Image 1: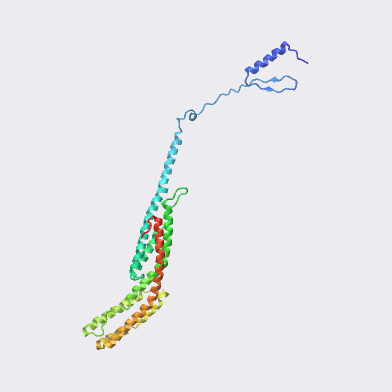
Image 2: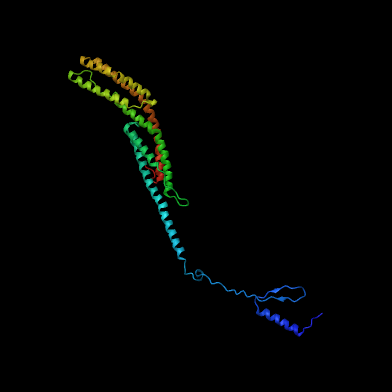
Length: 321
């Protein structure tokens, strides 16, 4: 069934169309089916856009507190890098230089010991012991620290060189004390029963000088024997032979001087030969131990020289040959 367009209906439709064209915010409330929808009143939100901030409006304006803070932080980072990174690197370079000096002195001590008459030469062995102690002393301080995520540079070389120095010092210590003890016993053996030139016959005016020379030899021998280490079992046989020889030395001197006064050359010659045999017996008791120490030291020197070259390579000196 068609609807009749009455004047009232046409006017109402125009009113509705006019409202839709001129009202931007109009909401309708749903009504019952088949009934006309009731119009809601217009809602005026009075909305206006907010003004943008100054930092967004112009790119030439900055927040100066942030800029100044960033500069201060950058300066602090540079300061920390100078004293926490560069300074340890300077310390590392200085430490490497000290390592190089200690290694050179240690190598020179080995050269001096090898060029001496024996490896247990008192002077050369003493220099070796001092150089070995200096080697450990220079390696004692810990290396500078390493900051995370920062290249270590020479600090790594210090750590590597220090480790090799400690290994080298340990190897030197394994023989240094034995060498030092052997050197002391060799020095003592050169003083104990150091027989002066003894004549088989002498005029009366030369007997007293011979007696003084023998008295000096006896005093020197007893002092050297008293300086020996009584707790070292390795040299116990030598100390026993020395004690036996010195215990009979006074009686021997009396018999020798009596032979000179009587002009008994055969007796004097026999007594002098006897004293030399006694000295040779004491030396034989110590030479075996000294030879053993020198053999061990000679084998270790080869290892020590390899260790020296390893340290020099890490330090950057290359081969010392």
